[in-house]
Amino acid sequence: MFGLKAKKQPDRDTGQGKLFQRLKRGLSRTHSVLFTDVEDLFQGRQTINDEMLETLEDHLLMADVGIQASTDIMDAIRSRIKKDKIDNAADLQALLQNSLHDILKPVEQPLSIPALEKKPYVILMTGVNGVGKTTSIGKIASHLKDQGHSIMLAAGDTFRAAAVEQLQSWGERNNVPVIAQKSGADAAAVIYDALQAARSRSIDVLIADTAGRLHTQDNLMEELKKIRRVINKFDADIEPECLLVLDAGTGQNALVQARQFNEAVGVTGLMLTKLDGTARGGVIFALAKETGIPVRFIGVGEQIDDLQVFNSDDFVTALFADQ
Image (spheres, rainbow, N blue to C red):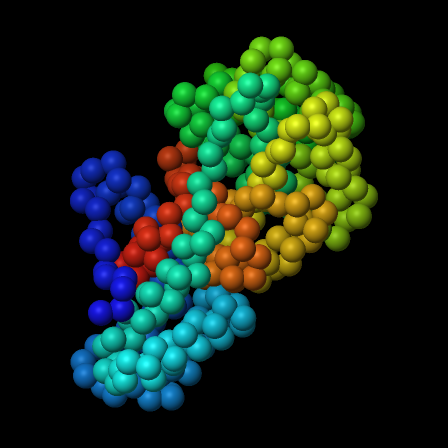
């Protein structure tokens, strides 16, 4: 009736089914906040009224969907109710599911590694402290290696003493080389050396770590801009994927980070981590609505298989699934 039918959940025992179950578990806290006391609205043949719609909007805000996205969602629902003369509260779920899906679908743009004559393709990993950036690098390296790409890592986080060791550990785990210098070395110089090494070995993808930094730390943001300049100095034709890693648990602050990093270096993709540990996963709708930046990956757990390529259909279906 509304264009988006309830998607059948994948068979639990298939590979796809197991991924979906991980996603559903990862979104369980957000589901709980969004649907506690709301699911009753979707039952029976109650007549839709303003109090119901206000309750639904309150729960969108509590799940950190954000003011702008929540307002747009509710406006779309009210418009559809009026246009199609819908008065059965049980139809609210389909309306909500449609509206959420419509917000996420445009940013569902998986990372695609182009076939380059001059390698490598560069992924520059950015984000504030504590978002799981280095761990995400290891997971992405594994994902791309499984796709058949040769990978090299660059230890550009020279600010944090343990960062180089952590990245080298991921390199050993994935059996990929890591270019590193001593702690405190110039990050741009490390990445320049890694670019030279990757090109000489015809490596497909170079994933460069950078120091975690607050978006308010001007000196570190300037270092990030310097890294971008060094990449283009090495080869003006390189257009790196600037992948910003965000912790879903920070809620609306993730939106502030996305704006600031985008202004500084031009973010081309997002990865939203730690969805399994928060009830604030609704921030993905705010990010999609207010930035339009493609969402490449989501993280729903600590294991290497808990990195998932973002799929809007699966995300919304898992969010609505019975827990």
